[in-house]
Amino acid sequence: MPLDRVDRAILEYLQANGRATAAELSEAVNLSPSPTHRRQKMLEEQGVIQRYVAVLDQDKVGLPVNVFVTVKLANHTDETLHGFERAVAACPEVMEMYEMTGARDYLLRVVAADVAAYEAFLRGTLTKIPGVQSFESAMALKRIVYRTALPLRGG
Image (cartoon, rainbow, N blue to C red):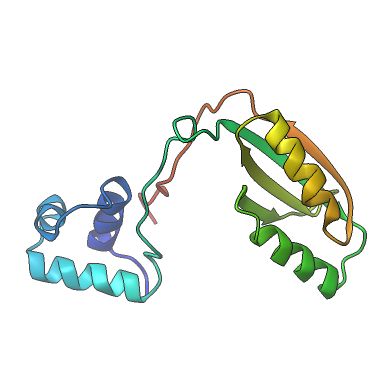
């Protein structure tokens, strides 16, 4: 079902104010509380809203290091691909994982307390996953833009 203007307004507001009360949300989207609540529940049931979370400050929780890792697998059998994906999905340090086109098979964003902690992850986990042929790491110097809200305007 396509999203209409009110659905988009609800989603925009909730992305910035996940703890909004029903009254705050209905006021923000200019709709009475009951229909606003129904629409919010429908968006949840349809999986448009997947979950509600608290966005933490990486520095303040002791995980200031972001490393982007590209991984090339030795082969592309279903067993190797699924095995790698399962192993990486089980690593809490891996914040994002994307299957890629081009010379590398996967791109990972890994968080760590410091370079030594990243090296421990690399040596103790990533290099031990069956099928990993090679990898390259690029350490982020500083974050310039970080968004958690999707751009819902238009469309």
